[in-house]
Length: 253
Image (cartoon, rainbow, N blue to C red; front, side, top):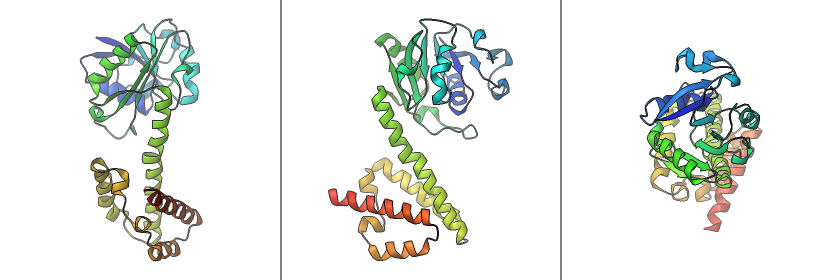
């Protein structure tokens, strides 16, 4: 059984602890947290440390901290030639300390502490310096997920950018849509079936095939009516930018 230490107590770290607890291939022998109370609902207090010097020897150390802290944290691991992976989508594998064997174990999913997720459906993107370490990561990943991919640092950075477009930006558009509903005293609830149907559609069709709406039809009359309704200049600029992008993309096809 693979012995793992989780370093970090944020969204990703907590979901990894939960996922690994359901696997017969791995055991989380310890976790590091600056605030040990963040993990007491997941691990016994004896398994949690707030001192790097107290880290136990393990087969794999998974660093799940903010991007800017990854390099410095990797230097704090008091061992050498151990397998160390970070979970970031935008940080290169080589940002890890040279003291240990470098790897990446990146779950490409939006994760929140208060929202449970089916980890079997979470894509795991793996990278390692050598084939033997990559095999270890694959065995671990396949024990908790049905969607495992080998992705190098450049590919992972591109995926991370794409993920911002399809998740973070889309969620911000939900926020803007909610603001419009609040302004005009319309329940945002009415839009939720549309949101779900759009998400389902893109599972079966390409994004281009799934695209609908006035910009897709180049319906300038409706577009101008929408712009007249919008009172917020930021909303107007975003509407114009996305409308132009949809129209321009249609011209290329």
